Length: 265
Image (tube, helix red, strand yellow):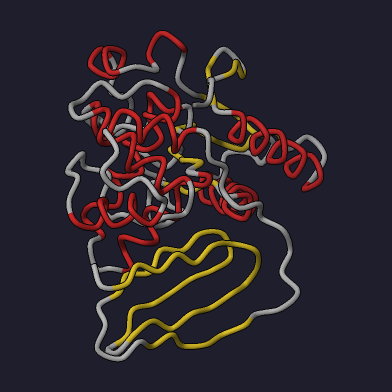
């Protein structure tokens, strides 16, 4: 679990804090007198109850809100005059390369143009689900994972969702984080040697596991894995990626990671 930490009268995750520091330095390098204007969520509102009191500019319900996660921030740039279009263009050019994701699709003035999210390592959850054609589950799953990470999830199936969150944290894709322990989640638990273990004990075991370290790759390696006539599922993490094909899996290795294969299940 991750603890939220103070930042300018708000609370953020440690990686969001680091990203904000990088953004401030980038703005200072951009030009003299250029500064980031910042707003965020106070500790009092970083909860489901807080969202019910103040849903923020997006007006999302607690289960779909990043406000309790320490990953929703409200950004602007000062020192550029009154040209809002120029301000947004500069803000996007500085913030987006650092991992801040704007809520709006285009950098044009709107009621939500200051809303950005620093999704951090949970962006892989969205990538997996979009890649499977289940993009409608991406945002709810990322929100749920981010809330569980900081202990602010107030919805149902917390134990089951925590299992799925940890599997994704370890890079083991198990579908949406919806609390439904279906065949994919069960297969992922078996791949981690936790098949048949009580769910609460699975949470304890997974919480002690570390994801593969992200280190620079010496080069990309690609290949194909085929086992004729045998059912199999592949689970990957770190720099190892797979795409299911008609007769197996295409495998790409960009760096250290894991490839776990279950066969005949």
